[in-house]
Length: 113
Image (tube, rainbow, N blue to C red; front, side, top):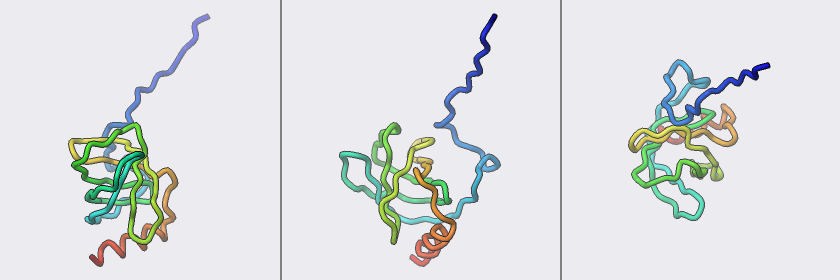
């Protein structure tokens, strides 16, 4: 008897087409601060945000196997996994999704600046 094994390759570093996203993204551009364990805060540019994650542009070397901790206006520090990288762009997924009302509040605050 042969055992059949299904193998799906790890695609966590691939850019997902817009049609595969489960949540809409809000276009925002803002400087935010991130860090990884055993590192200092450093500035990055947030370019979009959703309840499940965000895209940022970062010129500091990041370890894709470690969590990033992001500080957004008016919120406690949030953890996120790096899901894909393309040059200096990083797609990150929050460890705990944002509530839609929290997302709306953050977007309104960021768009005022």
